[in-house]
Length: 182
Image (spheres, rainbow, N blue to C red):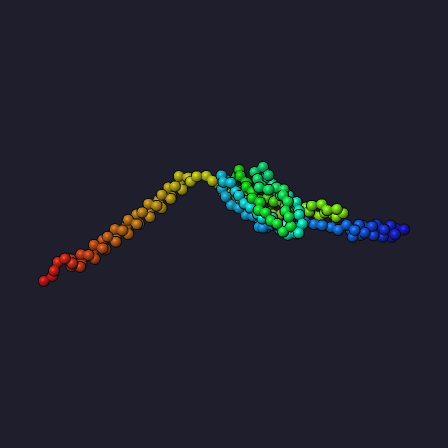
């Protein structure tokens, strides 16, 4: 009796799977990883391209798993026809110096068709942010840079003086061209 019940359940499940075709959406994303560097006072920007490699229309959703309050996306939900692509730009601001990581999560869902099982697909794009401090130069750094400029100017003046002395010596050893020698 158990074997017959199990056989009946398996055959019903397989019958439903054969009767209802499964339909999934496709996603292609470039680049597959994003690394951005900047300063704490700058607005960091990036972009990625989303393509629909299938021949049918799909709905795409984009979200981030962290820093949602600092992050803005140009497109969060959109439709793409078959073999169509779009560029999504993003910006993040107000981050303190440090290294941060988060993920963009993209899902594609094909538009509903009658008597089909819909299977959504997804992609994760890892993002790394390297943010440096944007503080102005300290007096010590300014002093070091000005010392370097002064040394350069001194060396340039020294080379110029040596050139002038050598030129004077060279000209004094030759007879003047306007005098005749007897």
